[in-house]
Amino acid sequence: MEALNIDHLDRQIIHALIIDGRVPFSRIAAVTGASEQTVARRYRRMHAAAVVRVVAVPDTHRIGESKWVVRLQCVPDAAAAVADALARRADTSWVQLTSGGTEICCMVQPLDGNSGHDLLLRQLPASRRIVAVSAHSLLHMFRGGASHWPGATEALTDEQAAMLAPAPPDGNGADKQVPGLEPDDRVLLAELARDGRASFAELAHATHWHESTVRRRVAELRAAGVLYLDVDVEEAAFGIASRAHLWMSVAPARLAAVGEALAGHPEVPFVAATTGTSNLIASVLCRDDDALYRYLTERIASLDGVNAVELAPIIRTAKRAATVLPAA
Image (cartoon, rainbow, N blue to C red):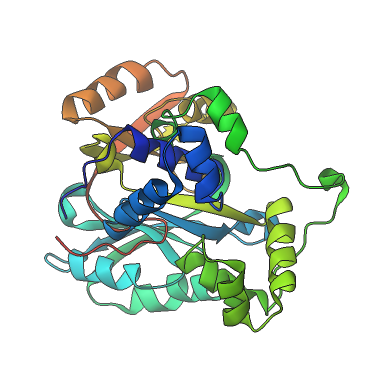
């Protein structure tokens, strides 16, 4: 799918949504100087082209669940079909074909405490098209989740960004107990995963709750950090043509320092410490292969404590955070 061309106003709208995914179009219009109708039309245009989508995502670490990065080696000519099947699952995100198209890398997030483990332990090993599986639990995320890619947050000035920042929650949030997800929350989360900007009236209709109950529950989960709004962005619209995963082996004494250094690089939208021989994984976005080469030989090579690096170029993305993309 060819990337939609976007201009400065489009990037301002994306930046505003990253600050607060549910910010009204009227507030974006007031900050950017465009009309509310123009902002809404631009968002709908980008949404239809799969350039941007706002989705609500539960923070599994806050509720005691784990996320896993899974690498799968497939038989020749099977990887694309397996990736598309994984992309259609509700418990996966960032399903990508890497390393020449024979490997799949994806994120698995259990929806009810068991489904992710069922996928890892029974369903994937049973497939004859998959010849090897390695699963890596995310131990600590240095960048990712609610912390977005810096390349998409450069369009607004600091003053404009401050005007769009959501109000802090009432009371002393640090002293409040983190609420767990109730069974009734699953319908609410499913609707917000489809559209993080769904109105409270639409959410109330889906959950059969009163609108005030929906409003209060969403506010509770967001204030506690259990639920955050992710903005699913097509990086190609920002001129990104070279994507890769870095699987890094880092000396344990330097793991935190290297992870924090990578989190400060504008090329890195995601970096986390994981289990396994490669104890640090990072995603890298560069304008072209030359820029990726310079990043490896200049930025990565200068980091103390990195013992080994495996570069896995991303050939195709079948699913971003929540958006299932059509096959090429």
